[in-house]
Length: 429
Image (cartoon, rainbow, N blue to C red):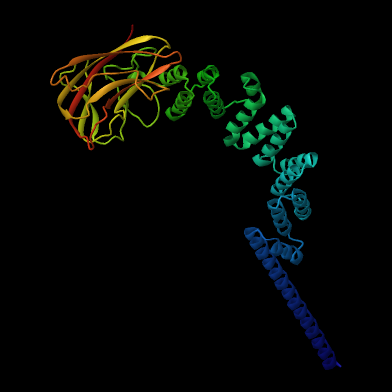
């Protein structure tokens, strides 16, 4: 009896192990089949979207309908075909399978909005925001939709939330507010509520680019710490908007005690070249040197200065382009006035067919000079004073003083030697 019992026990255990093995094999086969279906469906999904073909995406959806990406792929293809309603329905199927995905909710909101389902689009964007409160895109899209509906208070509340998550959106938010409120600075600032240096700088730049010098200066004056690069962006924006006086104020406010400016409105900054020369890559004030111009080098001279400690030396050697400014300065002037420019020059063994000259051009309409000097090769080996007179137009706010070469009748037109310059002064006639 004992032997018989052990035999039955052994057979029972073997049967159990066999059954488990069979179930394990079936499970593995099921997993392999499922993985294969999922992999094939994803391949078809990617291929269909990349090739913009509906058939592969439809096959993927039929093969694996429980994968939200297959429905999303169908939605993308419907969007490409201009069928926003069908796209929205497919996105709803994807969300039913993955309801906590804020990105799907944003896509659904966009599809519903384009399909004209405005209220449903708002709900979709709100769901995305609820799932991901710090996701800027959902708040940004919701804010824009509410803005188009005229719900300005709600719209800018959402836009402020988007900007808080992504400060790079701030300039766009300012532009929206500027357009909605017709440039009313008080309304714009109430809507966007700039409370950081970056935000206020973006606001000042918006005012500057739109030619609003008064509000640019008001906001800029409230900024206690501006880097040189940030200050230069404001100066550049104002100059491009032809707000020369405001640009000059911003520029001067950034100079330290070692670069104190002598000059300003209707005068030349550092006419005696006593302070640092600046490269001319960006528009600004003070003397600007064109570093990219080959064949001429600008340095300071200290030997036999006309006055002060230094003067400018232009060392010519080669064939630099004619008429291109070598050294220049933007000067604030008043419209409808007569001026006289005096300066001193000295040529040192200067030989050329295209002589250096000094020109005055309107800073805006600069095709033809308002005045130009005689060739500066006349003062050979000694300082000589030059003078030229000009009148500003009815709308002239600034002029450009430039040292350049006359046009040459022949090419190439080399130039060799030195030109010394000093004591530039502007006088009202």
